[in-house]
Image (cartoon, rainbow, N blue to C red):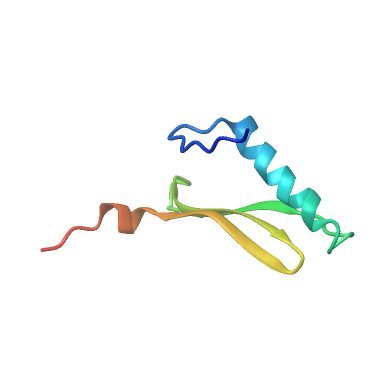
Length: 78
């Protein structure tokens, strides 16, 4: 019997298991599909990261996993 669970803490291994499952499925439709992980960072004058994107590119598609920038995180209304 299959059970479905909502989990608040996900291990990297469990996350990669699910990602590999969909990639294996997609290989039937895109046999030459290769994913490339990339990151784009915004840095201040001192080199401190103030924003960035963690993503993957594959099959002419950009999947943004994380997008963050410090200005929005610290923004407050007057």
